[in-house]
Image 1: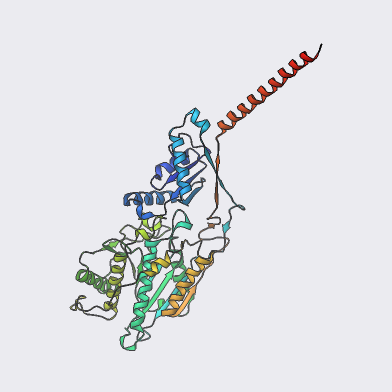
Image 2: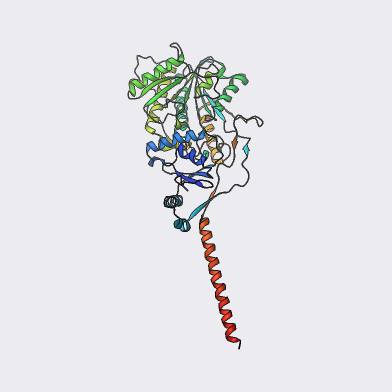
Length: 475
């Protein structure tokens, strides 16, 4: 049935993306609906932008609410659309006669066993690699991004913009700067460290553990030494706005301030239509969660900031099933990559502000975007990354890219405490649903009445005929 039905008890509510709202979800929950089935279209780009934003907002609100009502998400196909239209017509014109003749559908979810908690999740594996600069005591610049995705349905969450774009730009920076660091004549007086972390959608758990491993447990680490700043890349594949998120405004004599100045100079000289803004948000130590990845570093007194085209850290785009390739503007993502690469190069090579970025461009050509297609080929939810072969292959491919260009590459895999895990995942996220075409209960009663009447007529006919035959034969 669809949401317009007046009674939803023991019935499954079927919704399209355009139908789904927080109000309808709560109404189905209030009426004790058996389940909600959301039909996800294959072509997200065909959905109006306003409808996409509305669904993302409802999805983010629903994810914050506890419920015992199961919610299923299935990709649309021709048979599902026919079923949807048929049930919609039946629900809109339901009368007693139609109720008898109408066709209903029974939905069954086949579970092989009870749902169990997963205790061996290692999906927050992190990678780090280094491009060593000139001098052992050179300051370190850290570039980092988280690579996992999040959404209402883990198996359908591809995280193209958040944070496939950040990972794509980071890997391109790895490729570009490796060429500069490979020659002694162009090697700067900075160490350049790159990091990819998991668990970003779960309070940046992978980042937290990676920092703890490098600061508290490692005998030698570049994080122990002079860190110039940590640059976190998050959601950079759209918009003509670029926000610098900081926990405290950088002082004029700091490395962060110098880099931000170079960033603004590149933008004003080559991309004047792009708006660069500074967003200051203090860290609330009383809160259990952080808004951006750089806050994990700030808590350990490491200077850091996040670059994103989102101004609000609670934006619904950061955790939605509809964050697919259709939400990515490749031209703007490449432009943002060029801005970051040029600003970083100007900072590390100490290019004077008197030399305009228009006159001196460190990198020629454009960034490639094929990496985005690879990243979005499979969902990257944290609970999936160490289960299926395709997901394991993706994580291994990220590690391979690091080993191809960087030195001192290490993989940090963590297992949660079985007795007191930070977060608990459950299995059976991808379940087969079987749909049977059935008649309603009233049809069974009607059919039973017809059969009983038919048998009564037959019995009466036999009795009358037997009596007539007996009268004729007896003298």
